[in-house]
Image 1 (spheres, rainbow, N blue to C red):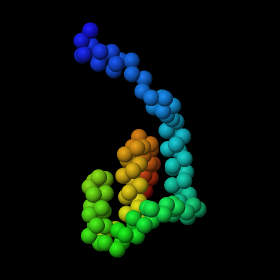
Image 2: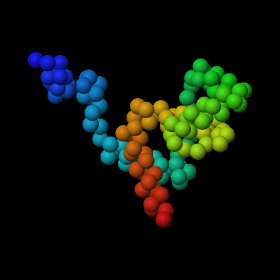
Image 3: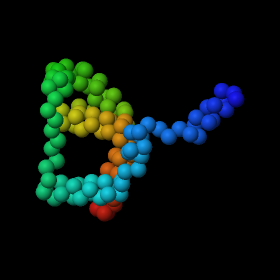
Image 4: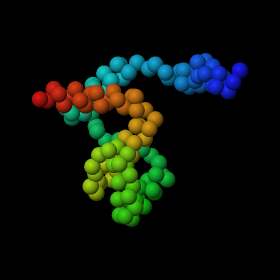
Length: 127
C-alpha cells in the first residue's frame, strides 16, 4: 500500500475528535430564533445591549491601548481588515465589539452566520 493509498484511507475513515462529533450538528434554527427574539427585545429597549467581562489582564491591555493612540490605531486597522469593514478612530466599545466579532468569526463562524441571517431579515423587513 502506498502513502497515497494510506492518505485516502485516512480521509475516508477520519471521524474527527470527540469534540467535533459532539458539536457537529447543533440546532442552529433554534439558535437563530433565539437571536431574533433577543434582537427584537434589544431593539424595543426591553433588554440591555451592553456586554461586560471581568478580566484584569485584558482591562490593562485595553487601558494601555488608550494611552498609546498609534498602537490603538494599528490594532483597530487590523481588526477592521480582518472583518473587511471601514473603521475610523473607533471608541473603546467599538474596539471591543470588533474584537469579539473577530474572535467569534474565528471559532464560531457557522453560528455567527445565524446572527447575519437575523440582521439581514430584520433589514429586509424595514424596507
